[in-house]
Image 1 (cartoon, rainbow, N blue to C red):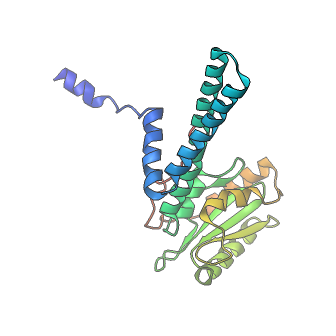
Image 2 (tube, rainbow, N blue to C red):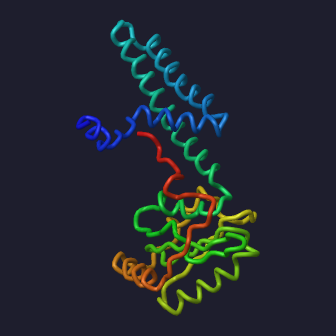
Image 3 (cartoon, rainbow, N blue to C red):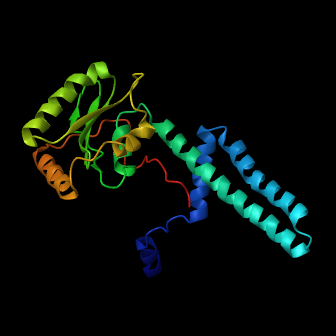
Amino acid sequence: MARTSSSAATPAAEPGRIRQMWDVFQMTRKYDKQALPLMIGGFLLPVVIGVVLALLLSPGVLSRILWIVAGVLGGVLLATVILGRRAEGAAYSQINGQPGAVGAVLRSSLKRGWRGSEMPVAVNSKTRDAIYRAVGRGGVVLISEGPKSRTGRMLDEERRKIARTVPNVAVTTLSVGPDVDSVPLRKVASALAKIKPSLTKSEVQAVDNRLSSLQAPMPIPKGVDPNRVRAPRQPR
């Protein structure tokens, strides 16, 4: 009984790096049919180059082996990089268009210096459209999730609230939705990083604390659990 209780209390070990990469590969291959051919091509290209250089430039057996080994290592590295890029795209394709997708991106993919939350600051209970907020060196950014025709009024209301609470702070709006000129979900983090800085680090913290203290908690729109669905980082 003592052994059973002890083993039950021990937390399950996290999967190893190879197992994690295998899981990422399986997920990517399921949603991206081009991932496997691209990875095979990425692996074979350095190997072929290594073999050719070994035959042309290396008269000795040892040097030829080293060229081939270098090609294999280069192939593994290139295939891993391709897997990371394709896995990121596959993850975004899974959650794209679902309520709560922007929150998942803000939780896991923000660049350094930006603060965001998976919790929206405004939600339309009927359409499940939502407004999210991020604060960084570029000021305050409001990100709408849904068609512009439905989220425009919500954005205007949130912009007025921010103007009353933290005047003279730049407010930028982004739209993630089905509209042609909307920002793709996978480019939200990079779009924030491109905004021209207007606040210092201390001002970012002060503005974020001020807005957070006045914000009533909002429910996450049903559709995406940001704690479980994240855009995976590139395997190292």
